Amino acid sequence: MKSDPICAACTRDCKQPAAAKLVSCPHFSRSDRNLDMFDMAGEIDKDLAKRLKSAAKKRKAEKEDK
Image (cartoon, rainbow, N blue to C red; front, side, top):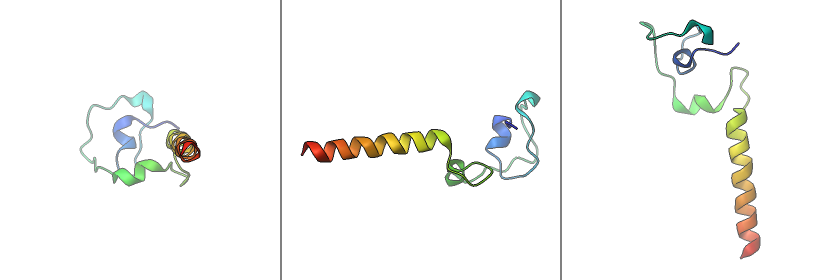
């Protein structure tokens, strides 16, 4: 289930679906930015994984050029 963006940035478990279109939440509690790196299953975020992989390739290419 894809959560509403407000819920995705919250530490609480009462996540609402993206179709809910929340404007605000009285129970909102911002999550730590480090937690944004992982999904609910504890796996690294797919977009972050792609960026890390491309950065590693770029560093490797730069090392080979030297």
